[in-house]
Amino acid sequence: MEKSVDNTPRTFKDMMRVPVQFYRSIGEDIYAHRSKNPLRSLLLKVYLYAGFINFNVLVIGEIVFFFKSIQNFETIRFAIAVAPCIGFSLVADFKQFAMVYHKQTLIRLLDELEDMHPKTLEKQKEYKMSNFEQTMKQVINIFTFLCLAYTTTFSFYPAIKATVKFQLLGYDTFDRNFGFLIWFPFDATSSNLVYWITYWDIAHGAYLAGIAFLCADLLLVVVITQICMHFEYISMRLEEHPCHPGAVEENKEFLIYMIRYHDKCLKLCEHVNDLYSFSLLLNFLMASMQICFIAFQVTESTVEVIIIYCIFLMTSMVQVFMVCYYGDTLIAASLKVGDAAYNQKWFQCDKSYCGMLKLLIKRSQKPASIRPPTFPPISLVTYMKVISMSYQFFALLRTTYKDN
Image 1 (cartoon, rainbow, N blue to C red):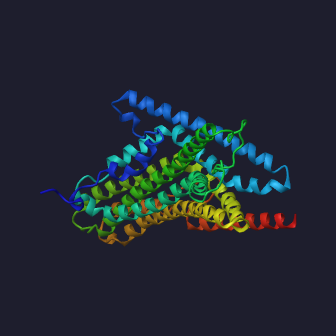
Image 2 (image 1 turned 90 degrees about the vertical axis):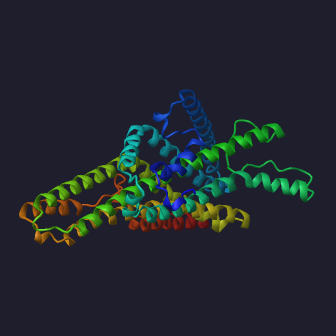
Image 3 (image 1 turned 30 degrees about the vertical axis):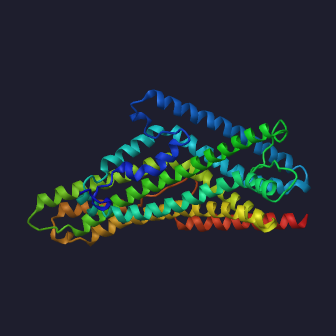
């Protein structure tokens, strides 16, 4: 009789499955260093670099379109429409660059987390891993759906609309439009062949941007979930430790193990900061502008454009909230260690044990956190600041536009 899923231990690769598979779809292999097929790894790398060259050529086209549009007040709304897409593309680009630049840090982080991962079903129950995994899956599913819905809608809506009008509603011409506003040095709608080649080229660039943007955050969610699980386990072990007065050596060995375990978790958090700090700084700055420009489009456009941009707006807001939520969860989980250490029966132990415990409590009072440069540690307070900043930009833009 086969074992049910609930009775099968979950490996670290199971936890990593979604971001790893999505990354591979654009040619990025996180575990390339373990690959036994060098030809496959080479082909994936060629596919990845070719895709990003194409994508960045398209981004340059968007930037040129933006600068051409702001030259005239009559076309400034087109510049506002393309601005969120440029911001999204630049953040996706920088996230991928950060992953490549800090590849060794990423490999070390994932290897250490895999080494710490509870291997047996009994251990996983002790760590309450199923609870953490359930929340993680829900977050991943929601954000993945929104991110792919945004890129799919922008990419394929014009072609679907034109096809319905031409094939079903009897329109005389097929409208050769694109989902993104991009300047081309040639007429991209001159013929069906040129149009469809260009169209699928743009669609692939949009998919690549969406996956690069999505997977960096999914990877962050998986990593922070694992680290929080370890902090919670440390807290549980500390609080439940009996502190028998006669077991002096056993108490010391236990506490030394917990201190080393705690220190390892803190070092993992520093790896996360090395990997994500600058990309998250750009992410939050761009998110404020994106939400502002998208909100402006929603208030100044037709119903069909409003629906498309509402998906984009939800994606941007959920992405910022997700990062801030996990930043807040990390802070709370690391602070809990000190509370748990104080709540044990330390008064039954000798002075040397109490001295070591005091150092652990003192260290835990400086919480682990995600810290972009010049920003305070990321938490739900950061989310409110980003939304507030976005609204201020939006109010300024709307007032300026109306006055003109």
